[in-house]
Image 1 (cartoon, helix red, strand yellow):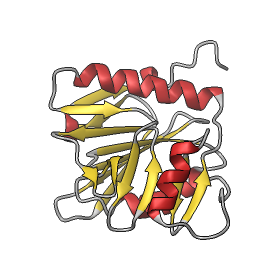
Image 2 (spheres, one colour):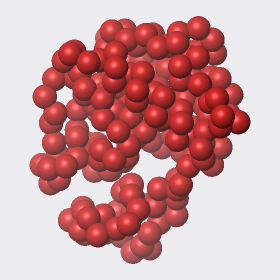
Image 3 (cartoon, rainbow, N blue to C red):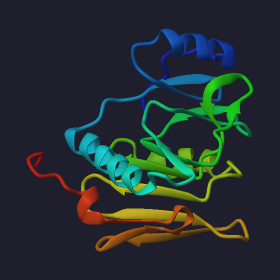
Image 4 (spheres, helix red, strand yellow):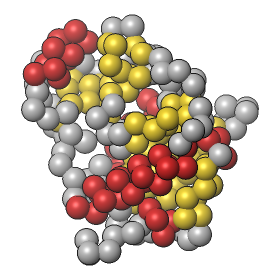
Length: 189
């Protein structure tokens, strides 16, 4: 997570105006805008590999992936985020105060960076799990071949599975992706 772009608390309207004129993306939590840090080549390639793998498998399905430029709002907390990849099943639903912010992702993917992994696993997940539509939160380590797949059970509890080899199975969207596709870093490392 970056540092606050401005130190004084902002309203949502101020954040949206600020974000519209900004050269970089900012997440918004508890009245503060946080600049998104630039990523490594590994982060960028893994995120693109995920996008291609998920997108090609969902072609023609009722679920649609979106990239890292898609703003996401958690209505119950008022926070805005940019995930590495979202999958929305059915019609996109947008925030009342921001016609560009999706509020109904089914799956959220984050590629972990050493500097943001605690934030992605902690603060972000605390917000994300308040999205009623969310069925899976997938954290992809960029340093080691390791994926943490959090799945919401019918009871509302979350079950975490760690995948270090083979295939990542996302039953909620009917997709399986070999980790070899996600971690194809030929020429990067």
